[in-house]
Image (tube, rainbow, N blue to C red):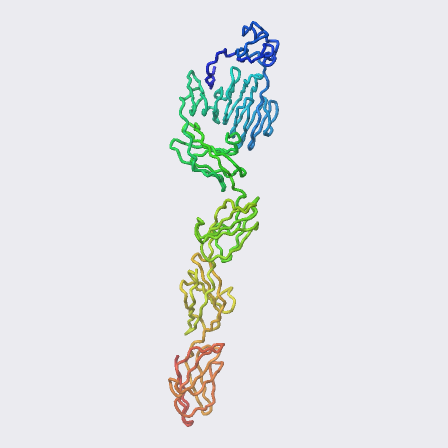
Length: 618
């Protein structure tokens, strides 16, 4: 038959046999009076007299110890009162279905209580003992009995999985006791502060003693577990020798007031600690636990924090065997609400192309106003940090010079006090390159462009079109300098330019400007004269031409000009006999002057001489 592992508190020696309860008489006590007060059947007072060999049934000496067999004592219900419920906690009465457990409920025996993740329950027993059921645990309540007015209370529980913590009142013998049955062991406890942890697979029981003394027996071996010690029991094996619990961690450096969420704490590391348990409760006895967590680092953060108020933090180290060490407690005030508003715009790590930046956020519950802070550094420590206290508005606009900024928000309460800052966002204010300003020149069939450099521009786009519409430009040039050039056919054009940043983002285009490419210089000029006319022809394309005549090749002594629309001209012979020069200049449609031909000489002779044609090249 399988042996049961049992935990029993070593009792101090008692003078009376274990089955008898001792009563110390007071003045005026009589056997009948005692029987009516303590016995379930007052008629059994004669049995009490026989046990105590009382000769005078009417008189009992004062300060006399009277032994009363336990089986004769009154037995009354000893209900357990629910003192705290946090999260998803359900109770199933014997023969009934599960329902939510509520503060103030009384359990009389036969109930099963389940706690979900991050859920807790606390109970007060009839003798004043306190019991805390931890998260993800299953606890059943068995016999809950009190022996009349003796002060003896018998409590039997069943922990099928999970953790409980107790601060048991001193148990009065011989019938009073506190027992917890588990799949691994039966824990019998009297007047001790302890923890029990049944592993998820039901194979291990961990017991840590904070007050009192515990005897652990299994497989024919017994070990004594004293205060600040713990042991590990496994099915089918003797209990391990007790080992000291890890010391309480140091929490002296933790803040007394917490104004930021998530609720987070960090404490000094310990070489022997393999993990840590941290809890938060509303009472210093940790009967009203609201948060619990296990972490492998000396730090913890709870994303879902309770309401603002006064709380207590408890931290303990966990050793390699999974035994949880001595507690370290730290009171603190949580004063984080109203929470900071949720920032909406600008987005994190975004860029504003305008110096006028619009900030916006979502309303925060309970906030009576907000604070916007803008700084050039992530630590908000610069003397250029600017703080804007605001009413209950959801946006603010501010003009910022180009550069990098960090901004954050906080909510204000009804007194105007700002609470915790929300997460900071980074913002870059960098307008796109402005439209460049420049000039264009046309000479000998080549257009040259130059412009002033623009801040933020790493390169430039230049577009040239035959009309003031650039959906399909004739030319597009991409250059890294602030000047460029290209060959263009004679005609009228429009051009514009814009700056581009290093990542290719483009700024505004400049206003389109006209560009006239003058005609090329005419060539192959021929002159034929008669008695009445001078006829000139040439090669070249232009909207118009101007003919210039002079007596010398350098045109230091010009005679007159003549404008024509075609590539030939007939002039009345107004020339006297002699040597002349002519040159032809192409004109644009706006009248601007193009290239000049090479001077072409011709001679006007007396009429009786034959006409002589002249030709010149470019």
